[in-house]
Image (cartoon, rainbow, N blue to C red; front, side):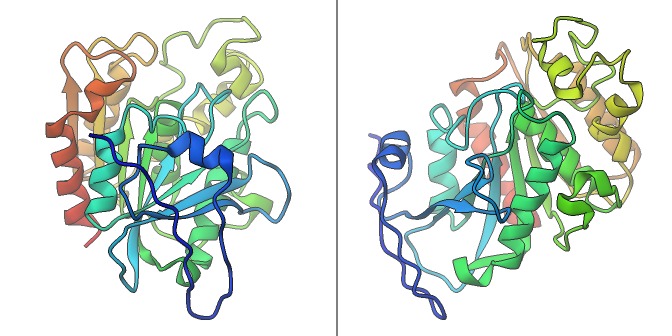
Length: 303
């Protein structure tokens, strides 16, 4: 039976910050998080008032001095959805994370319909940097940061994880590289190479890749390469757990296989789970065997 979230007021040392759950938040996450989960909602992470520059932090019921954090990056073809997306079909995964002592930080980022790439990378880096700089306030361990992304969010998780040990100023808010390090990436069917992604040659201005890049891959070859996570891959990258649907019609499965192959060639620890018969997203990715493997990875690389 699904559990109903209880919103608690946290009183932390050195802060008098109080949170009251709003109706919108309650409606979106009701019956998803375990009872006793505490939440900080709609935190502005970029020193502005943009709604897409907000994040939520969920803390486990069992109180600790600090929690490793899983940064949740939603999907939606870079042009839709919000920080509550993908939670509805990943309820058991969320419960496993919280019940095993992991904080979850779900972030919003600007859609491609508002700002083309690299705005999305800048926003993700800014959100993670906020968590890193304010870790003590929220009982987060700034040395134990994992990324978990879905579809377009998987692409962004891959990109941030692989570019983290490089210096690409275009990916950073105000061009300043943040100080955080990524410990592990959990990638759900995220594109790894936009130059080989299905549909990249579609000239329709509403095509997700065209919207993201501000043109087709043929029109924007340099930007397409910069936006491709595998461009930044090297032997110093964090471990990857990659989950891909066998029957994915949106992100061709070769995207995940190529990423795994290149990580292996670079001697970066990784595992690829291909879910038999699975489409682009859905409850098949919330299966017990996948959840167990996620906990193995987090237990190994975040402890």
